[in-house]
Image (tube, rainbow, N blue to C red; front, side, top):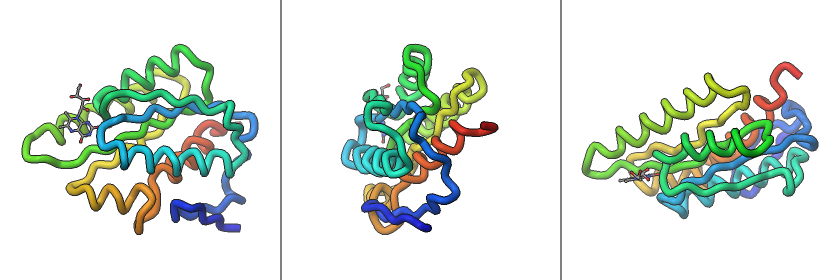
Amino acid sequence: MATANKNLSVYDKATVPDAKDLRFGIVVAEWNESITEGLFNGAIEALVDCGAQSDNIIRWNVPGSFELTYGCKKLITSEKVDAVIAIGSVIRGETQHFDFVCSAAAQGIKDLNVKFDVPVIFCVLTDNTLQQAQERSGGKHGNKGTEAAIAAIKMAKLGA
Ligand code: DLZ
């Protein structure tokens, strides 16, 4: 049956494996904190709804999305986890910073997926405006944190 959580994202629980025995890492960027907290809440709700135990979810903060790659790498190499979710929000400003931060985060997280045998899920919003980010972190377009959590569970169980 389709489940709608408070963050308005919908998933079909029948198609999601049980997360009861899985351990997750969540690395959260502090830039645009109101957005990344919304994404984090969406992710936690979905993980727990799918059977994950709170004790098996480790949260680390990093300053910005640029630091997500190192934060995820450090978490993978120091904790035993089955999947990691990298949460960030980059909002376009007047300089080219947006492009550099977005591409560094995307490339860095891709590289981690190639290097380590732990899936790292890309939950970084890249929006032109704060409103667009709000709409995707628990607003009218749902919550990408919820989607990332479902992806993390499926990837953790891939091939099992
Ligand atoms: C510097 C910066 C800027 C301008 N914008 C964002 C943003 O929208 N989202 C984000 O997550 N981080 C931003 N940062 C910070 C960088 O990610 C990084 O923390 C700093 O450049 C220090 O390495």
